[in-house]
Image (cartoon, rainbow, N blue to C red; front, top):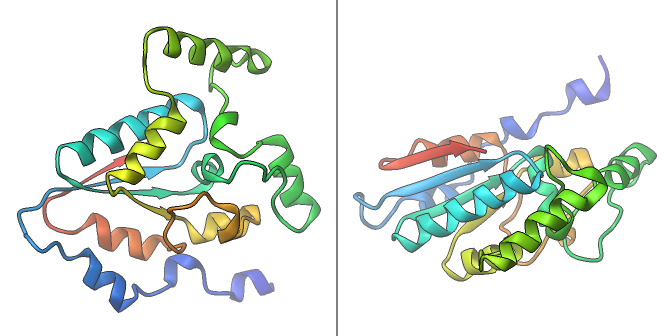
Length: 187
């Protein structure tokens, strides 16, 4: 067996007791929304942020778990390359992290597609992803990065934007998703 196979995965990490206590709403009737953000394309990012803001604005406790490619948009500005080995660095080079660098999943056209979408959004006074993120944080949306994804891409906690909780694993997120009055979305 290899060392990787013998190492416990983040999915096997038990839920910390302080986290489990924080999950219990003071009012059992409080509605909650958990969004699993697994993609870094511009349209998925935008949809996630719109739903987070709408949920929080309606009084729901709102959480987002950023996993796999979904962690990349939330890397700080100025962090261009993450990771330690050549494969992690190459992945970061090919999929530039940061909220302002999200590509369209279709019609990206070497950056022309996202530029056009952002120009149209400004023309129609739509809120851009960076502004939606700021508003979501101000309304108390809780952001959890995926521990395994951060290890995979070589992203350290200090590489993430301000306002993120400590990285968590799948067990923690499943605990959150199975709380009473909780809806879950995978984007």
